[in-house]
Every structure is written in structure tokens, then in C-alpha cells.
Image (cartoon, rainbow, N blue to C red; front, top):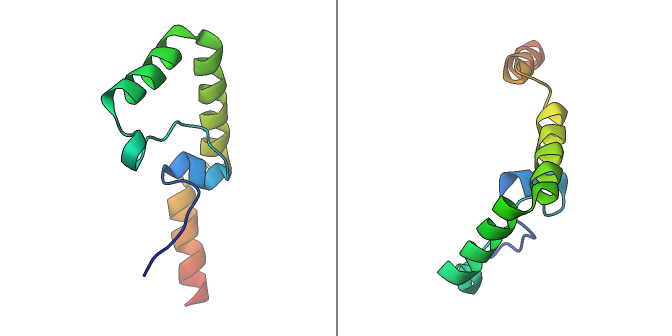
Amino acid sequence: MVVKVNWLAMPNVIAGREIVPESLQAAAQPEHIAAIARELLEKDAKQEAMQRELATIVASLGGADASERAAKLILTEI
């Protein structure tokens, strides 16, 4: 079975767009990965944007007790 997806990194999947860089298959070369890392390390604005977007994703997941609330909801249904 073949499944086509746009992203593999969970933050990207949840957001429905690329938030964290992905280097898959042929792009997973040391030079390419180093360039991505260098850009993140050297550009504060890029780091800050990624951190803001990741914080938004974390907040959308429902906070620290999200799994407990989900379990309670499941128990009420069964």
C-alpha cells in the first residue's frame, strides 16, 4: 500500500504546512541538512518564527491534561 503525504514531521502534519524543515530521501544529504541548521542558528527571526508556530501547535493540542481529558471522554462513550 502506498500513501502519499505532504509532510512527515508531526508539527507539519498538525499545522497542515511546513513549520519545521524536512529532509527526506534524496534531500537527506549532509550538505543540505547543514544548510538548514546553519540558517536556523544564524537567523534569529527564523528561529523566533518557528518557536511561535510550535507554541501555537502545542496550545492547539489542549494543554498538559489533554490526554487525561481525552481518556475521560472516551470512557463516557463506552
